[in-house]
Length: 320
Ligand code: FES
Image 1 (cartoon, rainbow, N blue to C red):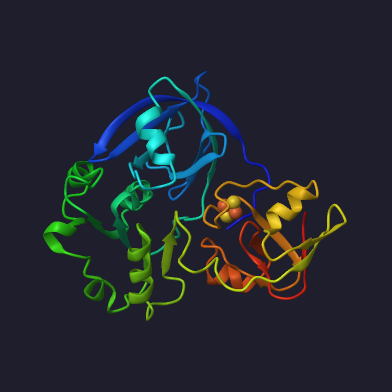
Image 2: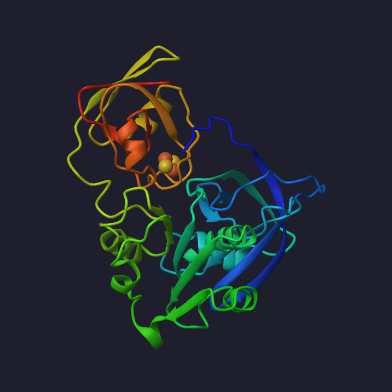
């Protein structure tokens, strides 16, 4: 995935807010002056800046060919940190919301066949993906799990558009997704795309161990378990562009150390899941603790998420 230092922020108007499943609303966002919205590819997400210090990432679930609107769908999660409650309880049609992006950490790669696995609200990035692969005549299937049929957003749309291609597996009727039979035998030239709650992602990662390394593509909106944990030591960071040298203490992130020295970097989640703070590394060994980069990116060793990742050794040189 690429590093973007400049991301456009704009105010968009909530042109529509409607229920698309039990506890799920779809927001349709328009430019207030009718200007065309940025281009995006399936798998992309945007940041909604709901209030100062309340920034959340949501996958785009509409049509990338439609430059007049952006669509996201939000699950009401009363136990979460407040973003979904704000969207459900406060945000109304006609309101203005600050939007950053789109950014794509989950790009749709070319493959002969696709297996999409969605859990709950993880269906959102899959919608433009299945539309794209269906339009180009690729071989694809979607397995969609949820708590109950009523809770599964966009179920009727999917049923209508792609009869027979989508397996609906509400948990109260079928139990957990049968991953051993889905993934037990690696299939050639098949890309797996999965998005959903962390237990599903972890189970798919475990069940697809025998698949080729680059077959699995995972989208996370919460940090991978235990990744941010682990011992923390202090180290030095050199900022090559500004010539500054900083000490990053055990209880500080590189992002905060840089901001303290007057070098601010774009950020959003500060949990290592959105990719916004990705920074080029010029020297030093990285202790990756994010949930965005895949094995290939990590092996390249030339970029890191400075909100959570650290140094393995005493020193890193960053292109900042
Ligand atoms: Fe989201 Fe660093 S701010 S990955």
